Length: 177
Image (tube, rainbow, N blue to C red; front, top):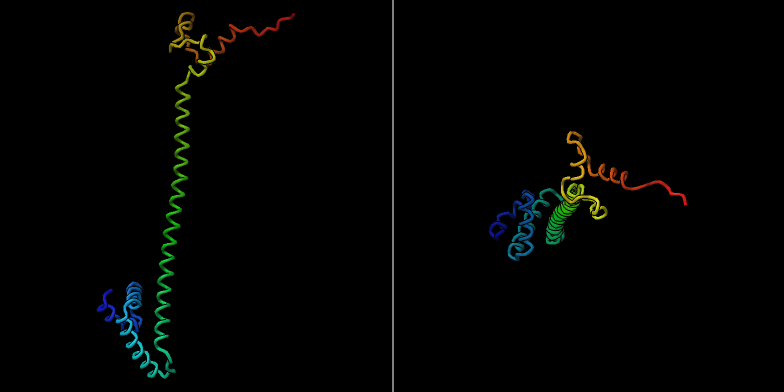
């Protein structure tokens, strides 16, 4: 706010007709500009003093102190509102960050689950390859199965193949000594 704008708003300030934005700019300017502060003090003393005389109120002994108290009260209110806005924005920002990290963590969990499922699906019949490598053919098709079974019979799954191998090659009988 310029000095000209500030001096043109002195009467509106005294009559309390400035909106909040104009009021805060006016008070900040008057607190930092000695010329405008002096001009406001003169007008405030004259106008408020004349109004007190007209209404029959007891005259203030120190108009300058009254004006400073009013300016400090307005400035304090402005600072409180500003702090509240900053606090609100900070809380919203922190909440947004927390929500982001929670969402990000859940997405990472889902991606991990999908990756594990894909790895498990890829392993398929080769899952037990390291254990049964000498018994299970590496080729995608089981040559023994193709040679011994009729084609109309449905193909056995990998686990069914292991069970049939175990049942035919491993003897579970207990030998008596």
